[in-house]
Length: 512
Picture 1 (cartoon, one colour):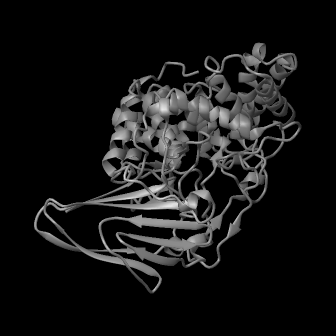
Picture 2 (cartoon, rainbow, N blue to C red; picture 1 turned 180 degrees about the vertical axis):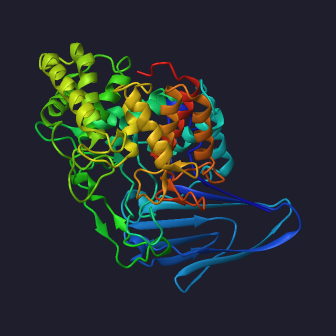
Picture 3 (tube, rainbow, N blue to C red; picture 1 turned 30 degrees about the vertical axis):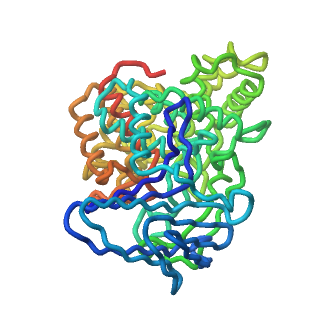
């Protein structure tokens, strides 16, 4: 007997012409291979994060669960009984039998609440064919590890909210960075920190339409930011208020509490997002056409903010919740914002001030080269005046701030590889208990750029070996046990894989 599960795609969904449409249904296909197998199925949903036990109503080959704002309808060729807060079915599967089940989500109220699924609803076979069609239309990738890149591009597509094009950081909330710990956050939002890296990875993976949709989503979500620093993250439909709350009635995954909904990082000041946004526009510069007034205004405003605020402290890309610091990576991404804005200046209208941006860019560079270097560490460190290594500085060669062959940059890469690398993964800093996948893939890129292809390939293979049996990566992994940690599948990790694989094959080819 085999059991296949899938998140449904609508029949006929094909690539960019029609796009993916989901009927919001989970599918299960049970196939009898030999003999007769007695089986049971149980449906016990709890709405509103476990606060609501639904009412059940069973009918012929169907059962319905209603609770709070949600209605779930399960259909399939079995009969259900309802008691003790669950619906249950018992049935036998014989050789040659194929049983299809559909669990469909609907709002409890409104016009669509009474809509019944028709016989045209997709099957597991329909869904598999839709994904094969998408893959067939995205075959232009030219780099190393094509199978792994294809899998990661599929993951990114799966993490894309189709109505807007936003790519969420992960599909889950509160899976812990450390088992039993409290570093459990909600990642079901779209981070600007990931924007340029996501755009680049989608472009590399031969997904030409998705990057533009992602950029258009952000431009709409940001609206007129005026003098305000652009928000670091948004909801998938552009929501700004992502206020965090804890669900104290839940124990959390393997006792890891609290369980959080929402993420208060949206309130933080992170200067690196200025560079991420303008870098994304720069990568797409040949495909954005004539920049309209709102986009011009947004990019000019962000470049001006980088010129004004680069010397300020912030929360950094790791979203520290204690004290703001002068993070090296934040300064470098301000340099990126200014550097790319200078190149885009002829297309940014009368407000573009390339001379001012050039002066600020040069000031940022001087500050980083003098204040981020630590003689004690023999490396560029995570914050000005610090002696602590931080893997975030691996982005310096990746954004063109310094060549990987620069003496001090090469020393930094060596120090991070030696002191933060272990068990095939790179930790963010010395006290980090687990390895961070994106940092490891950044190391791969740095080693490839430095002319160390064998070392780069070895690190790539070791990091990618942590993927589970479906090829999915979380945010982190325990190097000793191999257990994946943090929310998953993690867009940042799969983005890192795609970019690193391409770099292995094209170490000397400019990507912007």
